[in-house]
Length: 180
Image 1 (tube, rainbow, N blue to C red):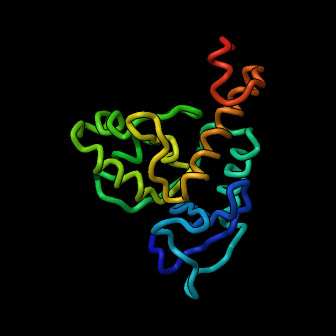
Image 2 (spheres, one colour):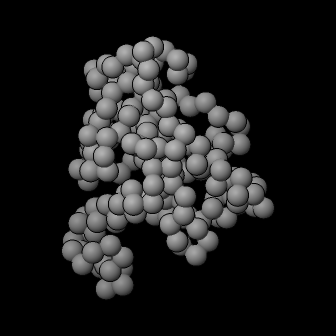
Image 3 (cartoon, rainbow, N blue to C red):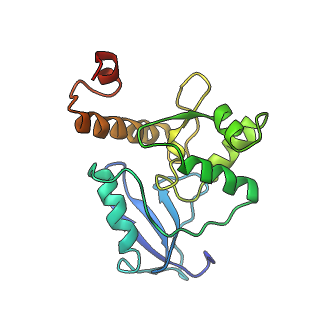
């Protein structure tokens, strides 16, 4: 999809406004406010909330705790390596995390954790392709185009949703420790 002429909408969310880019057939970008390397609407873009309603509905359901797995038509531009990384990110379960090193192993490039990190950082469809689930080798939160506070929020949100579904109200990470 050519980002020179595109439809867009703005979706309000608990982590701020999200810029959804695409058309009535596919989503090609989802960016947070102050997103590193994120595009900005210009005079060749057309705001069309209806054409991207399919994406907005699923994103809103995710934030409401009603959706764990997105089912959206997406079109992304990237190198074959980036696409492999983005596909592997999409396979990480809701509420789970993976280290960049482990992700590198999954895409068949075990010595390329930094290159994997760079590809993760170029993910054009944040949240949908869950780049927030990639963490440092010691489990620390590192690099996120939307900022680390948003990454933390997204991970805590997913843990809270899982906790609610399991009946645990102790808080993120505490249910497993309590055996729930």
